[in-house]
Length: 418
Ligand code: HAM
Image (cartoon, rainbow, N blue to C red):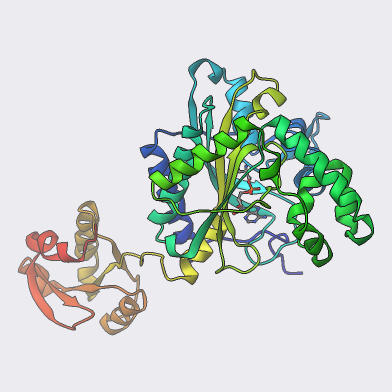
């Protein structure tokens, strides 16, 4: 038997990992610019943290969690998302004293979903959570961060922002009733999944992918008609802010998101370039979550973004900056090996990327240098070295020059990027 990675997991390396790092680095840099500090929460938590926070009736909690009992008899769950853990940390670390608190995180999440392109059982998210700010200004700033992040990745032309509001508790409850009564009148036409959701979570029927449901959803009442004055004003201010900051968006009254903790603003950034798993970033306001997990009433808003999907989008749209090219060192003859390794060591200290092959004659080594896409080769035999110089060949133009070793850092500076 050959051992394979478990279904829904994979090894990430090469170009894909380069894209991952680019996404994570960009997110971290931007989050810092917006005043967020990084947090690393545990990969597993008490199951309750997620079941209470995300909601028992959601797909994530009812079908997708990796839950196990440890040797001490505790029920633990691998985190399916980052918000619940961040909020748990906010409470248990006593951060409630210094609001607002702005947290950035990056790491693996786990959901037992059916694997397909862009959907994995272990996947990676970057995310931010802003706790302790109830004003719509916070929503606008969080959306601005999301937008600038995707722009900095060079993906702005491939994504669109969809926005909706779920209103406050009161508005949401009235809307829920309206939905239950509408869908109850169409019980016979609903899919089995949606029938099950009718009592537990009727909002979820709105984003059902089932063709039968889609037809009925078309005629369903819209949230906007059920917003109370306060919720309507809140949503309007968020939209005014987006316009003031030149962030393009469309309102999608059917956007409900898959987790139960949301109130007021919800949003998703979607691409058409990845097939069905096109949501690259999603988030919203969750003013009841801190209390649900045992803290004091504290507003919160944030987003999570799928690194796997963004990395794939970068590669597929040719937006991933190319890898820096190495300079190869090629000793000619055994006597040159150590002196050349010494030159390589010094140049690396100067910030050059230097690679070498470990055996073979000059021809073989130069072939290898081309294979690793080196931009130049430093070729040196003992005669040249005795004169204190080496040859530098530009591997694109083929031009070669003799360069004094002491002048190498300056001569090679054209090859050192950024
Ligand atoms: P979410 O929409 O469940 O929200 O996930 C956020 C993003 O994670 C998705 O838009 C998608 O890009 C990525 N993602 C989710 N599941 C998978 C999967 N199986 N494979 C690959 N990528 C996936 C949350 O998790 C919330 N915690 C976001 C949030 C933060 N809301 C407020 N604060």
